[in-house]
Image (cartoon, rainbow, N blue to C red; front, side, top):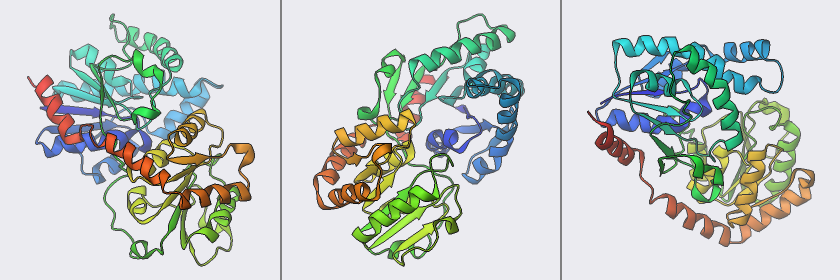
Length: 375
């Protein structure tokens, strides 16, 4: 089959669908990935054929802030701006190379319009996180009405394709999934880019070891909170690995010799070598900890998705949460001590991971899609 994969030009959008694209390529399907020009080199480094469409992410952000100042600039960027920019390039691409199937990540909406125009089957691949809330999808659909009308497509706007591949672990999913047709649960995969050789020191970390991350968004990842977490956890473990994200490593100041700080390292390299994850409850850290059955201390920093994930981490018995107002050094240390000393957290995570292992892998999903959609 010829398979077109589309993704909004951001790492967090491409990475969830990349394992399926790579699986399709391994199965000898002809795969092309379409995204903004600024993501093309990264996609190619991951081993896939990439084609620039639409606009690079910085231009999209600038246009959204200029044309739609205010709270709705982000949703305007994903709907009117991106789809209007990407569609002409996608049409030119598919005029010369007509795919048999389109696979898109859940917030790349040009694929759905392209599929409707060409009559091509389309499959939605979720992030490793709960489905977009129903009310936000309704807002996006209303904005896309005008884009579909401009393309002279009279059929109702679609927000998902013929199938919805749900990579969110079932206990973390919300009731909003019931409004999505054609849902198939698939195994989440921790993908974070092209293969990198692990640094030699990583396998030599003294155990037990803790991994500390607050992601890459500056409003969440601050030197102050990172420093507090490191100070709280480092006396409890033999070593700490902290990734500083948007902050220079030097922003943490002098660190104990047991603490190793890097601005960035792929989680897939880190997680096999640690015994505890401390994060802000983002999708990457939450699913990563679960896939390696690691106790998780979730410190949500205000985002609703973080708060919801942290609540689930605690209610499922796979970790503990501390609300933003209570994230003191003493509270963090007490929670980390409990997670390291009580085996039940690891056991519950192992049980939940076992359920995820029963879901179809990317290789199995591609076989399913080929059986269903091959001409």
